[in-house]
Amino acid sequence: MKYKFLCWLALGFSLLAVTEVYSPAPSVQEHQLTAQQIEARKWLNDGVEAYKKSSTDEAIEDFKKAKELDPSLTNAQLYLATAYSSQYIPGAPSPQNIRYGELALEGFQELLEKDPNSLSAIDGAGLILYNMAGLPFSIEKMEEAKSYHQKHIQIAPNDPEPYYWIGVIDWSIAFRSNSVLRDDWTKKTSRELDPSDAMPEEIRQEFATKYGDVVQEGIQNLTKAIALRTDYADAVAYLNLLYRQKADMERNSISRDDDLKTADDLVDQVKAIKEKEMKQFEQNQ
Image (tube, rainbow, N blue to C red; front, top):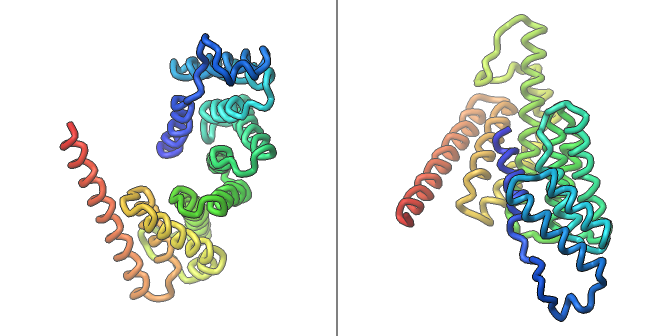
């Protein structure tokens, strides 16, 4: 939950990085715009200012007015969808919250109809779908979210983030399925099964058969993300988690121990990256 919240903060910060700010003195470009288009840009900038002040509801209304006045103003569409996204609380069941998620997704998809290669809209759609897929859990939405990150890779294959998100989604699917299998086995047998215990053979085989490809895909994508950004601590952390899922699929204890050793080594890598970041931060103070 905390990580999802931080992701929305990152999306929100995109609004604060706006470079198109209206100036009362008309530029050459503004002379070529209609009065309605200029007014749209005023509403856009008002929305950005409102967002900076954490007045998200006001920002939404401003972005809506900008979009209505100039449907070709893609920033207004993108910022409106992003603002809806920032209002969405993963797992909250209220109709209003669900509607925020739907409006955000619709906004990103509408923008992609006009600009299929908009990475901001692609990433926004992937993230809102991932957050909407958590509670209640939906593999279908998880897979749809993954498809957007795969599209990002097709457009910009050297960006590490989409590989990371595919890995996160694959871990989410595998982890939940692992937990469900363990819980069902415990209810059926009335025997305790600690999360760190190896899976009993009857559910190990089912887990490996159904989700082996998912875990392998996640490992491959996270490894790629780390190759593109060697200090990608979050990617290393999730790679550790996926190796623990892989360990539960192994037939023998030696292979399981090897996977757990790899996972432990990755935890050490995360610690080393964080320590290096802290030292650099302290040196810059």
